[in-house]
Amino acid sequence: MTKLQLRRRAILAAAPMLMAAPYVARAQGKPEKSKVVLAVGGKSALYYLSLTIAERKGFFKDAGLDVEINDFQGGAKSLQALMGGSADVVAGAYEHTIRMQQRGQPIIGFALIGRGMQLAIGLRNEVAAKVKGPSDIKGMKFGVTAPGSQTNMLVNYWAAKGGLKATDIVAIGVGSGASVVAAIERGEVDGVSQSDPALTILTEKKLIKIMLDTRTMKGNQELFGGAFPAACLYAQPDLLKKTPGTAQALATAIVRADQWLQTATPAEVAASVPEGYLLGDKAVYEKSFAGVRETISPDGLMPPGAMENSLKFLVDGDPKIAADVGKIKLAATWTNEFAQRAGKRS
Image (tube, rainbow, N blue to C red; front, side, top):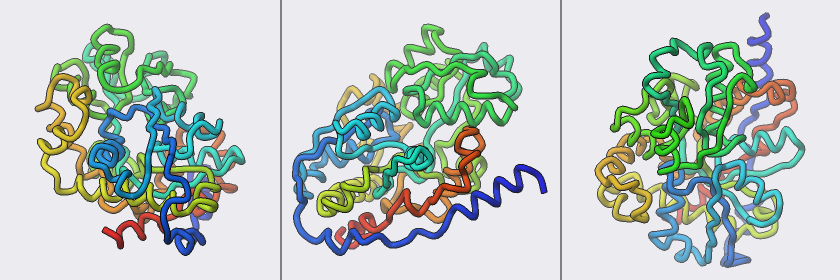
């Protein structure tokens, strides 16, 4: 049996079915704490659209919450805020729950925003002409939201497919939105690993060629074999255990936003977000949303097999995760209970 087959077997053995956690029974009343500090990295991206909709449509307020949203350069920074105690909850990539468990610092996801990764890698046209595959990107500079974020992990994953190490490429934090477009226009990076609307704007301007794309469910199926958990709400265990009513209110607001986005027109979405999120081109923003809508979770629940796909993604791109894969318990990184209850309330 090959090393790859052994690794796959270990992943499957480490991925038991989601087990019920005793949170919902105590999440009956009002939020135990109404003021909540939420950290996010790159809020203007469509990757976090459900968060913006929950805020702008008053869904957090309806759930009895006063949510202060602190926007950082990337997901790794918002995770640091959570672990440092300056944030109660994070809207960030699910994969951080796995990475932190591997480090012995448990965090739990409880409301899904994206059921597809929603990211893509694009290279400047003059660079793309020289790249036939990931083995050709050695030494290149990639604009990611922040080093250590999922955008960074996607580049590492792609590089690994070409037999390269993470150290064979350079990840430069460029944030999201307009700063991404500027990094390409100025030639500061060879390519970007980012989310929309920045990618669509760069494509429309004919400044990049998309090399790897997970902004559709088809793209996720082709790359990962099915659904892939992207942004979600995650927190340290105490938030769910000691203040389950607060966790429930957060999940309820996000699930309402997920549901609203399933039927909202692109024009309605564009009218609901801050004008700055449109990056000066409302039509392109609407086109970007229409392109990624299907990757937005319809119910806040973790799809079957999605956690396993996330673990495989990390194993392929991170030797440290690969070495400890047998110790990782996926069931401890997620609970569907809050989203299920939110769905019943809607």
